[in-house]
Amino acid sequence: MHGFRSNGVAACYDGPNLHVESDLPRRTYSLEINEGRCRACAVCWEICHTKVLGFRPPLNKAVVEDIGACTGCRLCEWLCPDFAIVLRQETAPATEAVS
Ligand code: SF4
Ligand code: SF4
Image (cartoon, rainbow, N blue to C red):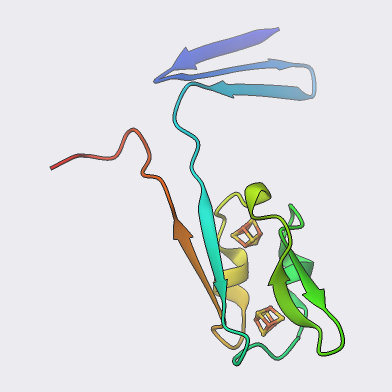
């Protein structure tokens, strides 16, 4: 097993497994979906790797199912062809400069 600790983050790997722990504040996110813009194309819920997004029949417009699982990757925001999604970071990272 090999590992390191730096700036509040500890990581070790054991064969194919990587374990990461952090003392840093957890970032949280909010997602705003503009229902009027959404055309139910399915790009966002198909691309979201943590299944934050889903859809509601009968129009199958995008909805947020589990915001706690959002990693802030912004793929849904960048790939939505109708610019219907806005992602906001709710907490600042501890390493961010304070003026
Ligand atoms: S990618 Fe955009 S238009 Fe497509 S379902 Fe998601 S929010 Fe709606
Ligand atoms: S930012 Fe990434 S993790 Fe969060 S909802 Fe969009 S695709 Fe999913």
